[in-house]
Length: 86
Image (cartoon, rainbow, N blue to C red):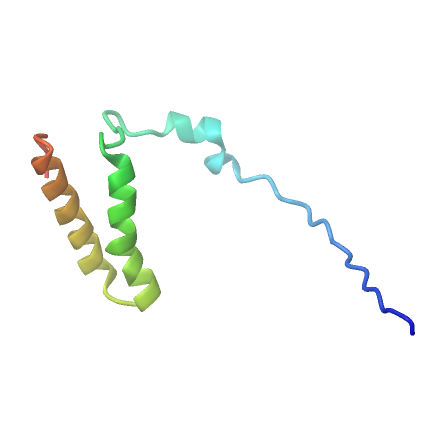
């Protein structure tokens, strides 16, 4: 009995360089003055998935989910004793 073998060929697609406007060096030069990550960025990312991320999956209202994310971040920051600009 012959066994069949399958050869998988992987095609190598050329990955295009991003436009200059998206390059890391240029992005670094376009950071808004005073911008910084929140002291609880990991938590913010987690909350994003439960709020705003839902809008992408469920096709619900993105504006409502963004507000829910903001409210949850403000609540969490306040609970941590931080003063936040809203």
